[in-house]
Length: 175
Image: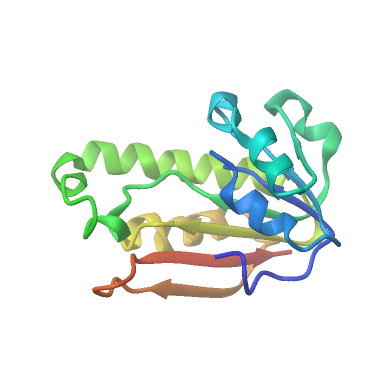
């Protein structure tokens, strides 16, 4: 997923979770990589994983983000329905309700809004989900662009579900 990202020196994995994307970003040693997650417990294994990979990744807690900004690239692999992975976890489709989808859309919009503030002028805000639902992808990006007219979408790509691969979505946003 991190291949094809715009070039950037200072990178933030905004929804880092366990840090897999942070580690992939840090494989390019020219990058200065930071990781953040709204729930810091999700990143508890990241320092050990980074040490094993001999990667330099700084973890940043929410209250310290403004002082660490701006970043040339902010990657937001946002919480989503996981619809792109339902072929492997079919129970997910039975737990997604209209109310839950609405909650996810609000969370995604908030993540984009907050991450945009951390992105340097001329930098890149990369939004991704493992969803194939328009409501979580194109509609979320359109909502962000409507609310932020100084931003534009440089590229989007939807990766469809295949028998061998999950589906997901990515948008490259800049101002």
